[in-house]
Image (cartoon, rainbow, N blue to C red; front, top):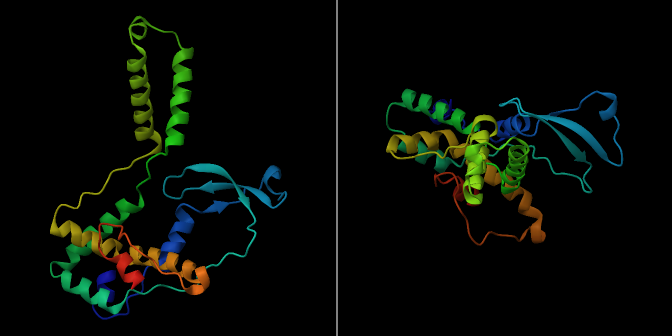
Length: 228
């Protein structure tokens, strides 16, 4: 628990765990051992990608990179000042806050991103083709083009909500909710930005610096601490 680290033990940032989790959630892939997928042809391999949270499977194509990839080997520890500031902010029931923060973290980890325009358009075309191939009833005959398209859009939206996507924005409307979010996400948000900045160290001979910054994640300071 983060509180245990705050109360004296060294605070180990969750970057390494985050990488392992992302590896197992969205980037985990197990090579299908069928005859068709055992062979790498021209540096390309067919791989079955498994989303460990949802169980969704999809076939992806992996290519060997032209250059060697840099794999981070270290954790990103939150600065002591950030830890002290978080400790001062958490001046309420620590056990309750830790529990609610864990619940919020689980909700965040299980959210799915909304579909892209390309996915929506493709689904719309398929639904339109299916609707056109079915028998048109009396009610459908009375629909104009705009009403028919509206009906298709509603069908697509409901399909995504039920099957593919479950995206709901977080509502941080109270001090407790803000504390919960900070406790759940300060370390991961910091680690994500620090990881990206480490990749950019070699840009422009190591002279690259950011000209502006957007502190994503409800503005709890993770990006600013990473840049600092």
